[in-house]
Length: 345
Image (tube, rainbow, N blue to C red; front, side):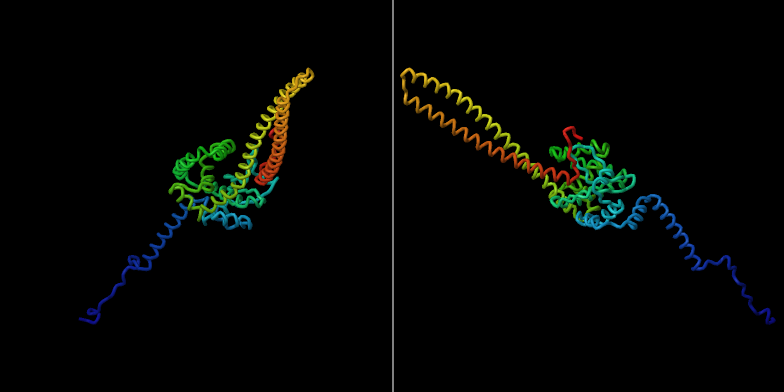
């Protein structure tokens, strides 16, 4: 056989039919990247508000007051995120009242949240006696922002839990008055308002609600303590005012009764004195009767002195009540309750 007959010819394989490891990896990566892009697109479509919030937070520069509110209220990272995403603005009057209007008598609005613009506005409380109240209002409004972003399913889950807590406080007149106020000013937002009120003002809650609020606070008891501290300033003043009014009513009734006794007593005494003098003109003398008249006159004079002392005490209590009312008026103005005239305007 010739050399050519004994040699082997090696034929190259078709390159189009060959699958390399590098190509396989490239295909897997391409598929993975496509899935990531698709997943990212789906997430973006279903989380547009979160994306908007994130860009808002990145661009928002909180003031020193706003940062202090978030810290003092023990807002968690999530709570602070939602607070900053609402771009909270601290205003005083008349700017604040033009932003967050209120026409309800004896109620002061200290904050508001606008779902349309996702924004929070807070009233600047400068009275040092009410330290802590602004932080509570900030937390209250932050929870409105949180509620605004909850799903319908989550709101439906929370509503009966909130109503159960509200039921436990149904006999509290202050709480009932607050709910009546919100029913008038925020119709249809009962669950929303309960979510903010209960989260910032109720000390002990069901485990389910505590777990929910733990998303927004690192220590919810801190903001509740601030509420109790600032609210005590008003309750102490109002309790003192109520006590003074009760004392005045009791003392006024006692004075009126004593005056009636004094006047009727002197009417009878004067008639008896005239009778005694008439008998004396006829030569009839009654030393014992005379002493009795003198004793009765002295008792009536003592009663009159007692009435004057009661009147002095009454006037002193009135002065105390006026001072207390002045203090309450100052506190009311500090929480944006404007003085009303007799027509309620």
